[in-house]
Length: 236
Ligand code: CA
Image (cartoon, rainbow, N blue to C red; front, side, top):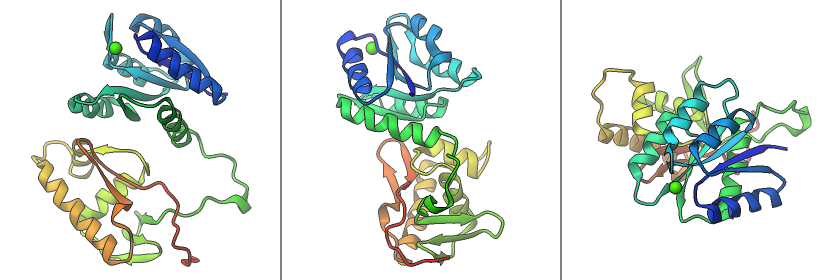
């Protein structure tokens, strides 16, 4: 049973999240202060984290978790108008975020998705192999495919796609993409990233893929889909 730590100083919100998590079979603990949360961090598989706490900032907890051996997954609760907080949280090491006001159902769905991505791959039965993703790259040959069809990408387009495919479904901020594709010290603007992604998406569409295989997450960045390919047929 996955252990979820809910860090939120508004008791009504915290208890409602915990209630829905327990109903869905999770073990949920509530901490209403940063100090209480810090004592529980090592026992949690996933932390739902409000950033504004009475005795400090949730950002401090993200840092502590990322330095700890346990490395719980983190979903940040943010208010609708704090885009900067969301971006900073993802860059500090949060796995996902949910915008207030949210429904408890949405939280439970995010928790499941994040735990699925964080879990080590199960000892797979060969018969139950996961369905292939629509987008694929081979780093060794630097070939890229959409639904089994080869696409010709520029170096940057390939590196962007490979970076995002390392964690399908995860949101990458533009700063993270710049960091990983160009490296430190390059003055790449957000608009440059956007135009490379646009080019990449255009090639995906021209090869018969859906435009939303590479999704724009407004105010944050980009992600590639983690839904398996539905257009069957490429039986390689
Ligand atoms: Ca708060």
